[in-house]
Image 1 (cartoon, one colour):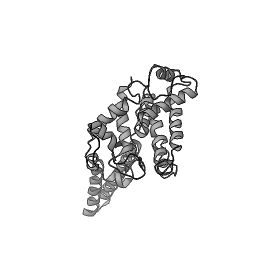
Image 2 (cartoon, helix red, strand yellow):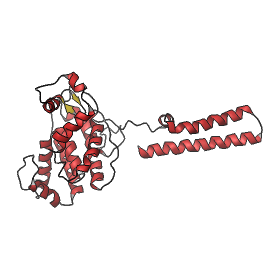
Image 3 (cartoon, one colour):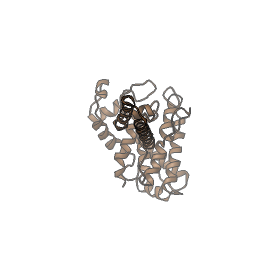
Image 4 (tube, rainbow, N blue to C red):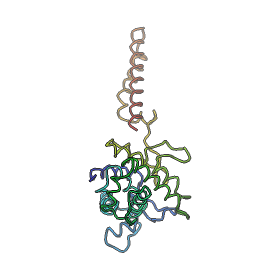
Length: 275
C-alpha cells in the first residue's frame, strides 16, 4: 500500500544504524548497517559468518536484507504511510514480530482489535488500523509511546540502562541529557510521512544514534565551494585597498567588503535552514 515509503524509510534508518560496530552493550554482536551477523548468515544461507564478513557487507546487501526480512514482515507493504515507517524502524530495532505485536496491543487497548496478539498482520489488524480513534496520526504517536514503554522495560547489561539514551533519541528525537539538538525522531518523521510531507533528514545519535553531524557554523560553511566566490571578492577588495589610495578606491573596496559579508551571511542562513 505504501511501498513508495521504503526508500525514504531506508534513508532515515541508515542514519540511525551507521557502520560496523561490535559493542558489548549490543545483544546483536558484530553488526553493520544495523544488520547482525546472525541475520547476515541467514540471508546468505550459511550457519555463521566471521567478523570480517560482517565488515565487508555492502550497502546493497543491507538494503536487500531490510526489504525482505524487515520491511515486509513489519507490514511495510500494507500499512498506511508513516505507520509503515514507524513499524519498520521498530522491527529493525527489536524484531518485526515484536513491532507488530506492539501495534496490535496498542489497538487492542483502544478496543478496535480483538484478534490474537500474534505478530502477523492480517485483515483484522488492518481493519483495526482504519478504525483507530483519531486516525493514523494519533495511532503513530500512541505506537511510538508503546515502543518507548517496551524499551524501558528491558533490563540487564544490554538493556535500557546501557542503551536508553540512544534509543530515546532515536524514537523521540529528544536527548534526555539535553546535549544534542532536538530532531524529529521516528515519531516526527512518521507523522510527516502520514501528512505527505518530506521527512527531515536522517539523524545519528550516541549508541545507535548521534546528533546531526552536519556543520552549519561559519567555519564549516566557509569550507564549502559555495563560499569561495564571495571569499574571492573579499581578497580582491583587500588588494584594492593595498594597491592604491584615494577616496574612490576606498569607497569601492568598502562596498565590496559589505557585499561579501552579506553574501556569506545569507549562505550561512541557508545552510542552517536546510540542516
